[in-house]
Image (cartoon, rainbow, N blue to C red; front, side, top):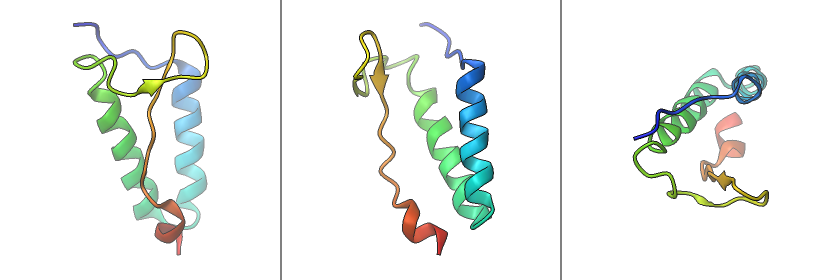
Length: 72
């Protein structure tokens, strides 16, 4: 099993997204962060779990949470 390795840019992107959403709804931001990290933790066990990415050799994880309603 390969260990999950986060790129620095990915961590920066996640932090930026969470910081932005926290301005409107702290709980929604934390829930989103947890949902993303929980799904990412599955990748070492199931590397083909998510759909094929638009870029060759990548996968895309879709977060289906309805953020718009969580922000209000």
